[in-house]
Amino acid sequence: MSDPWTEWWEQTQLRFALLTVPAVQVQILALAVALLAALAMERFLDRTRGGWMGSSHLRAVIWAAKFPLLALVYGYVVLAIFSVTGRASYLLGRLVTVFWYIAGYMVLAEVVMLVMPPGQARRIVRRVLLPLLAVVSVLHILGLLEPLRQWLSQWTLTLGTSTIDGASIVLAIGAMLLFWLVARLGHDLLLDALLPRTQTDPLLSRSAATFVQFAIIVAGFWVALSLLGLELSNLTLVVSALTVGIGFGLQDVIKNLVGGLILLSERYVRPDQPFLISGHSGIVERIGLRSTLLRSADGTRVIIPNADLVVEKVSDLSSQRRVEIRIGVSREADPRRVEELLLELAMAHPHVVSDPAPTVVFQGFGQSTHDFVLYCFVAERPQLEPTASALRYALVETFCQHQIEVPGPQIGVSLRQDAQTRQLPGGREAGAGVGDVSRDTRAGSTDADPPPAAPR
Image 1 (cartoon, rainbow, N blue to C red):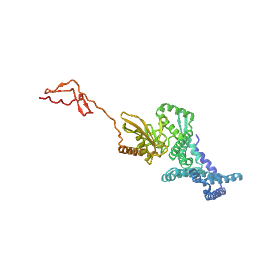
Image 2 (cartoon, rainbow, N blue to C red):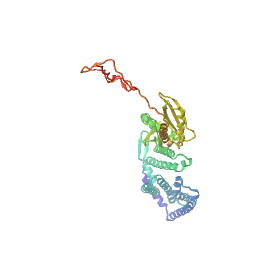
Image 3 (cartoon, rainbow, N blue to C red):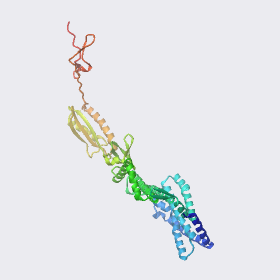
Image 4 (cartoon, rainbow, N blue to C red):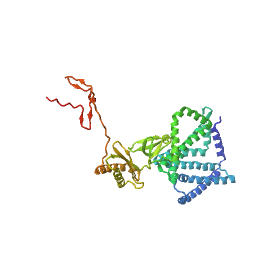
């Protein structure tokens, strides 16, 4: 096993032996000229930004890295000139390549500032990204990155038939962090730039952006596994084997995730709209990855799995505007007069619309009533319950004024006295029990009253 540090030291000594003071001065001067040209172009772009740049998050990220990108362009032009003229350019090439790391730092810093709270973002930039940039730049200039990679590759971890080295683990962690930042940026980009142009509901847009963020993170996890050197075919077999063991525990989660995707694609269930779902009625507040949040009329928040919204019946109450009032009146009342009074009450209410017009249906004959149903419509659904309540109040007052009786349910009770009697202490006779007494509720008397005294 070769020692990468010894090889690096030998190559470094050889390069320093070939360097001369005039050659170093020429390379540094050429780099200064490239940086001045990049600075002049940056100032020109700043003056003309308002006419073509815009203010989206993606453009802001690209704009943050404009100077190192311009320095790379002019630096590679200078390197091409040095290569054509046969001049030494090792130090110049090292210094120009550093701007790749500076551009990556500027992009990551801008993404962090966009997707995180300002205080937390500044701490991450100062304590993580800036020291990381300094360390990587110094290692690159000194030529230590390649020996470091070779040294990490010597540390291996064996998992079954796969061998993972330290360099692959570092790359996998970096890929996961990068995809996580891209997922956060994509989430904000969809909410602020793309979905508003499609006139999508804001709450529905938030759910769609969350699904996109989740998909990017899953893709990053898959890429990280590939960087670790794991064969995807073997990984698929492992996942399939695990699915057999834990599939029964995860199948509900997967069904809910797929159900959420179906809800977002079909767009039948929308946030801020009333629905009847699994016996619960209320306003849909949010459609998440696994469940939907429903706020009922009494303020209770009901969490409903997304799979239930796909396989069960869901009633859309957003267009429900019909008021239905059932009432039974005495058979002595004139049915036509009752119909006229009900229509007058409905048309007199300010929330009842004229199209469609209120209607009254003579539904049938009860045991002692004529049964009617009043149908009318209101302009907006929030007026449904208040209008129904107001119409019931007005109905009671109007029927009282016109002496129209609204009979309640009648219950008949029959109590009887058994023919057989028993002897009580003291020589008195009584029935077998209290339940044997028969009472006539219509006459207001009972069969159990004592008989009149015999004449003397």
